[in-house]
Each structure stands twice: as C-alpha cells, then as structure tokens.
Length: 359
Image (cartoon, rainbow, N blue to C red):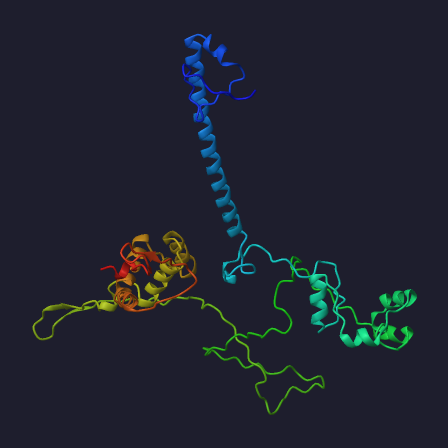
C-alpha cells in the first residue's frame, strides 16, 4: 500500500511522519482511543527492540572478530610467526616431512628437484635445451616419460636403465617407537677411578700347559668395587674421669669437650640435614633409615635439633649470597616476557621497577 501523509489529528510516532499502516486513516479515526493507545505503545516497544537488536548485532560482530584474532594467536608457532622455538608445545609432535611408508625417489643432493616436488611444479627447461631438442613425437614422448634422462641425450634407453637414480631410503617415522638405550657411535662414559682404601692384586690362572709360575707381571686393566663396611658408623664412647688431687685432696671432674656436647658428629649431622632438607624426606623415614642401615636409634626431636643446628651454621653464607644477588645488575635472563608500562606524563614505555629496587 502506498504511504500517504498523516492527518494532523492523528499522532503517529514515526520518524518520517508517513502513513505505513495497511489500512486507511479513516479506519484509524473510527478506532477507540484505548485501542489506539495500546497500539502506539506496541510501536514504541517495537522501535526499542529494533534498537537493541542493532546494538547486540554490533557487539556480536566485535566479539567474533576478537575470537578470530585469539584463534589466530593460538595457531601461531615458531614456524609461522616470530616466536622462538622454545615457545612451541613440547607435548605436540612435529609432523614428518616424508609420510610413513612413502619412498623419496629424488637423488641425493638434487635440491632443485626436491623443491619442485614439494611445490608441485615442473623444473624449468634451459634455453639450450629448448633450441637443441625439438618437440619429440608421441611414441618418443612415452619413452621419455618412462626414462626422463633419454629426452636430452643420444644414449639408447637400454643403456640408460643402469643409470637410473637409486631410490633413497625412506625416513623413519617420527612417531615410531625407538629402541631405548645408547645409540651406536655415541661417546662413552666410563666409571671414574677413585683413590682405593684396599688394593687387591689378582694373578693369572694356571696356564693351559700346566705351568703355574709367571714372570714380568704387569697391570693390564683396573676395576673397582664399592661396598659399605660391615659397621658403617663410628661410635665413640666418652668416659669422663674424676679423681682426688694429690696436693690438696680435692675431687676434680673432667669437662666434656664442645665437640661431643650434642652426641652427634658434624658429618652425621650434615647427613641428616641433607636427607631432610635437600632430599625432602620425612623425619619418620629418616628415623627408620638410621635404625636400619646405621643401627642407631634417633628420636624425632634429635633429628629436628640437628636440622636446626645445620640451618644456623649455613645462615651467614645464605645471607652473603642474598646480599650479592640483590646488589648485582644482572642475575639471570631468559625468554620470560616483561612488558613495558606506559606512564601518564610521557606516554612512552618504560621498564617497571623490580620489587627489590623499589625502596
């Protein structure tokens, strides 16, 4: 229906004040006021909903654009972006260049042919080949397809069959299970010979001729064996003596040296602190170990006291290390991101102040 001008007696909330209803204005005049007010309210609600739909459509488009950018960032790696190789996922296996079961027939060293095979393009012909070799007949073309090296030479095909390139061995699949252990050709690592406590010389066995004597004996090989002693701990009993003075008759008692006040030597104490502090084992497990291996019953309180004494002994060294670390210009560097912060005054980026330099 063609839009007409709205009469002055009719108030229609339209932007262009054009009549857009599918009925004439006279029918609108005969409509009761209550119905007209309700219809005008519905029109205003329709306009509000239309504005909301437009706004939500714009927001959805913005969210979809941001989502595409996030997906593109997730697909980035060291191959298709400027990210370093260390940022790649270590648990995602890299696809092999040659599929499993496919043999690479390109001769070794023919990098141009390999590049053409990868891109799917044929190698370009040189100008001399185009001028010197006319277009072969159909039969000759079939022969050249079977033996490409015959197309640019005068050697018969029967003689060229022996000069075909040897197919290269297929590369092993990266996902194939490899045999564990050392690989052939790796540098060996032999056991280091330590200073022995006991040296055992073993003479050769009797000769096959029946003689048992040998002359010019010399060492041709050395081996070593590690073993714990039958009693792997040294127990020292300290007996404090007392006696009467020959001069005045006064009874005097010996004093316990500081080395024996705790009941546990420095090496034993360091061993306990190593197991608890560095290895992170529980005190109950260490208590069972000392009783099983060293046959020494130690209470949990004594173990804790040995740990505390060790901590107090190494505290000055840790304090010195911390002082040097806080005063050094560079302690360590890696690929961890450290973003620039923009200041409100200059608007340019600057490095944030580390927490240990804020004071």
